[in-house]
Length: 346
Ligand code: KG4
Ligand code: ZN
Image (tube, rainbow, N blue to C red; front, top):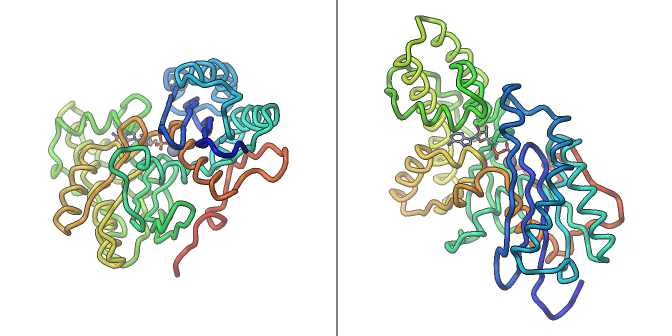
């Protein structure tokens, strides 16, 4: 590692269907971030096709890297480390970025930093001007995870509760599919919800009446399916179902997040992950958190969903604490047990 000058990290994200590269400088901040979304490639299949995702990452990553380096005005020789998403995610997709990251690090003689994708989401708010103070609470809501986490410091996380089954993003996506909306369903459902009545259907608020911080969203899709099939699916009925399901998901997330604030006495809340882009969730959470004298922090919209800037932040933090790859092995894990990264309470 070069001593004396600020650290500069190049990061690669390829865990699912976004190919992304970013360059972050310890002193100057984010210098460049490039992203290519494969959404058009997968749309016809109604979901991500893993093999197609891997192949497309191999096509996209090198041009994205060249472009990121150029926009950052930096040469590979000026990089202190290469961070890459090592999991969790689609293993073939992960391998494309991991192999590139590990070999580039080897060629440059700098450390490779395997990064936990969720840590990237958790630390994404550090890319903004207003940085959340530590400790704080985080509601991590993505396509694969729904978690309430106490963030004591970068690298020190306590899992308060998570979903027993479907993630919040999955609940959005599956409901959207039942309503015949195009992939990716979450943002489409949110858009349609704006035209409907949030109280038209009384969908379940799973686990909200139970103590603790666990979530469960799998029952919601059955309720949505019954509502969608219960009568002719007019445009009005579709919008009403969309609005009511969004209301049920947001209600549940907000209810549990506020309960965690009350119990931990932490007043600052971060909302991160793809579902954190949901406008209703942000508004509702923001209002309630302010009412409790706290503050809501979230990454800008483009850093809520998958990107490499967040991997660069998490990678820089790991580099600073010396948490780098111990050898030349390429690390790619479909499952990365959170127990290794997060301390569970209880
Ligand atoms: O974090 P992310 O980009 O990928 C994962 O790591 O999972 O999250 C993607 C999820 C998808 O389920 C997508 O439908 C959802 O985030 N999402 C939204 C919105 N934007 C993205 N859900 C609700 N409202 C949105 N505006
Ligand atoms: Zn993600």
